[in-house]
Length: 505
Image (tube, rainbow, N blue to C red):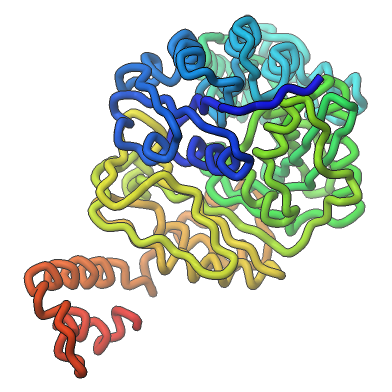
């Protein structure tokens, strides 16, 4: 049964809220923004057709308040709620609340979220579907003695993982028996604080695997599509930094096997909507199910670039009861796409968040460049939320060209007023192992020295020249705006920068 969606409330903030709203706008669907008091001037609030404040800055008092979001949806007459990613996107209780109020939840069913949100239960489900899983336990463990016995069977190193949640939280590696008890305590503590559940289990720790995920789409008519893979092995503390599609590691045969397994996994749980099946792949090209994300992924734009599919639009169509707009034969990987996460963080100081006012912003553009961002000049990155400023995505016909384009885009990206990871990303994509596509999840650890180096990057000189140029412009406004036939209006600071080669025309 189809139901036309005319108005969508986006239960999220920042770039993902804005990204969802843009697809809604193209579909002729009105949007409602919800915002905390800290986000009153956020770009997603300004973009939406309607907006509602739902509480103070802490997410526990705003973006995680299911009752306030439902109330806002009813007040504004929203037919549906899109949760984006994070916050309530994988909360089965919230999906049920939406259904009880007659509001469409743009995502899978609560039952599916529960089945795949619990990693222990998900492992069992995948085994039933014939999808390979990492060797380990299929039951929770709380007793240290039982854990030690299990670890001896699995063989060290092992990884102790929270059964609920994700994002790299509640995970600890034990290299030997002496570390098991302390790592169990740390994993349980982090899981309880992060997800409200301290259930843990144990798996074999695969050393230096590839982290590869497959995007799937499914409708209520039994159609399940795979939109191929994303390579997500550039990680720091289990947090993704750079993603690309296709994977430089997979060949056609392994890609086909993993795609088949991803579709089987989705069918096994009766999945509806957009989701991601994550795998670990070892050096011998054996792959194992890791987890399923029952939501839109941060890195979905790289798939959109290479497959030519607007994933958010497909989510909305499926939620309306419509069939998918594509058949599997329509989905073809074309070209190469890379995504870098631009964050307000101090990479030279243990990656501490660096919130603050964006005094000057210049985003890259041009052929094959996409910036998903809610930031603007004069916007203040708040302390309350994830420090990601934007996602920078590029595409090109070949991988080497995509890397060249990303290098150019990162050079053009300027954020003045706070510390970002842009220079860190510049160094990262210039590392030979990355350029050659020969990297795995140990990449960051193995290249710490190269990533910390500053040789060859005129960062400080560039930043000083930009700031000085802008100050000079403000102090000599009339001179800079004068209509002359010569170069007398050229800023003295800019002229100096051009002369020294610090600035480019």
